[in-house]
Image 1 (cartoon, rainbow, N blue to C red):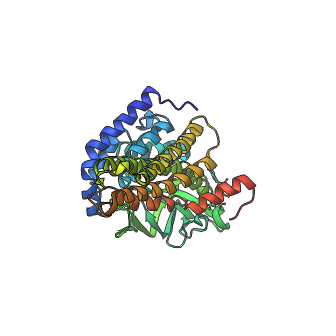
Image 2: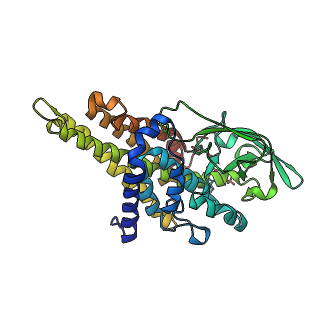
Image 3: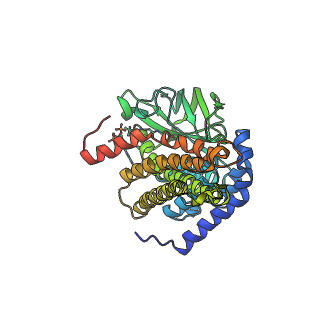
Length: 383
Ligand code: CAA
């Protein structure tokens, strides 16, 4: 792998840096306190092409490779993880999955809206009773003539409050475990679908996270994506790439922690000199720096494998595992550098730590990533 970025990759990274400085950085504290980013950010993300990365231009996408996607995701994660999550889910888990699994009609129906930011997508896998054991989900879709009638509920759904379409996973037959699961593209204004925004989250407070409830939601049979019973493969393939995107967002958190810690340490004076001159502060900073580099390299490897058409699922789990744990460590170390000031939200370290904390939980906990890696190494499944 060549670690030197191409001209195009360098340009898109700069575009993302400028976007973060102009559209995100001035609002981060305000959005965090208000528990909502400004919804106009979605349209702006679409206009600049960030919601169409890796998607073909014929469907409204902006093209680019997976490394470019990681570079943008990292910058957005450096700016605000709540904004980064909009892209990781609406593009990463929904649009990219439609582009891969969808019929021609489904691609034409949904991709132009999702890539332009006219529409927002969410990923309806997790349920109140099934998180890690996703294949055991209990939402049911029962065939009635040319329709399916869906009943169930979905929990902790990123973008859930704002989404126009949910990529929904539901059980369509009596086969055990994941074999009975199918995927559907359900417009969120379908009668019987209601949502409740989840408040009081530790981090990602600007994110429109919701619970979705489906009561006799009728969708045409044509809303099914991929063959009947193949829904879990759809979900797993989406998450394999999604985990790379979370990892890239975590690199952004860790980089933000590093930048903030270095700046603060060179300005703050104690014992008659800048605290950057104290060896134990340098240790904190160098630990963050090593975490940033290691997480970034693991993440770029996944992008490189995808772009070369190589297997990447285990590498994606490794990147997500390491980068999410690294982001928590990095933000925590940065908070230590900031001392008491790090504990109030006018300084960045606290929010970085709160946002980082969920990264070891969603899109597969750290423990699930270890089991996926362990299974690949030993050939023995723990599930
Ligand atoms: N591409 C295509 N198909 C794949 C695939 C991939 N990358 N990975 C697996 N599959 C297929 C398999 O071939 C298999 O299909 P068949 O039965 O037809 O052969 C099927 O999917 C099941 O695969 P596994 O045997 O690997 O599945 P499992 O039951 O052993 O999985 C698990 C266990 C790994 C723990 C899985 O349940 C899992 O990943 N759990 C974590 C769930 C999770 O990450 N949830 C995140 C929620 S989404 C979220 O957080 C989004 C958000 O809002 C931010």
